[in-house]
Length: 425
Image (cartoon, rainbow, N blue to C red; front, side):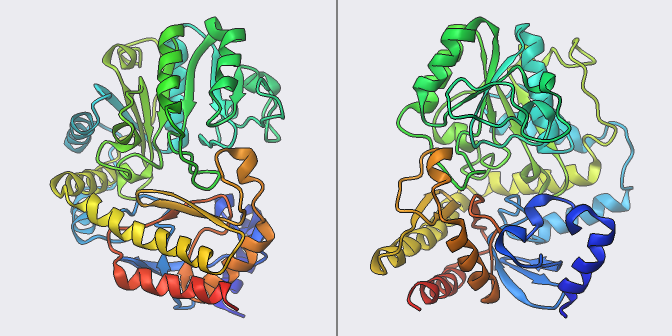
């Protein structure tokens, strides 16, 4: 029995499912989770000492690679001053100022402790600012596990109020309306019926929780327009895309200015953190300045702020970083496309910048419905091959691969060789 198997057996006695987040479970691929002992650069090591090329990167934030030297040193220095104060610190001021400088749509920002908390708070602010209750979200977009966002989309474009988790009262979800990603007509239909009641649209500008699905044509611009026409707010959930697609995220990449933006762990260098920010007049609604209450004892934690400030500063001061990162990612994803083509495999690749996903379907994946056409059984076999051959990817067909700046031609070449061996067997 491996050390991971022993740990998993023990964990199941005390932790639901043996994991502290469902995304860590290997249930869908029929394996035991790998328990990790350390990570460095482009690599991660499990409890049995096996080394993997890491395409999860703590689910995205390790854009510089794991345990980056300057981030590590500044975290250690912050820890020497104390782990937590529950009070205002200089680092959180520096961090807020830096984010406001880097992201043009943000005048003011509030630190929180997770992406889920950021989304929950942004939605509350949107409702408080507009005086409306309804929120439009998109089928297949994940915005954390707050009650209002755990809504199951039905077959129609106007499905609303169906909780997607036990323990969520229908009343918590009744004001959540679901549209179809990349289908503006579905959005328009919702506004025709409920426009005067819609506080905001929330969207992952690049959907990265049903694999990786890119916005088509002028889809995002149309969302901006319909929000303006109806005096609703546009919220970009950039928990995944923020500071990954570029220093100003997906909103810079697509040149769309949202009213509110949410961020997650990338602004903490992998430490537990989140934030939401936007236009000054909206953010001035937040307590203690305004009437929208939101609080957090550990918000702006000095250790997380030290890690995040260092990481964002390094990204800011190295403008060529993203070019090199994207060149490495293009080498990987175009190489995967070539393998698929040469071996006539029923699979496709969606990618943008350093985010990508292989879907086991020939269909163009453009929304949740087409993503669900992927052969999850085939993915399970593929996943087993990858993990056994030292390539660490998410144990789900519907998660992204994250390329880090610590990777280079060597890691890409090794990864492509492993993938090719799977398809030419």
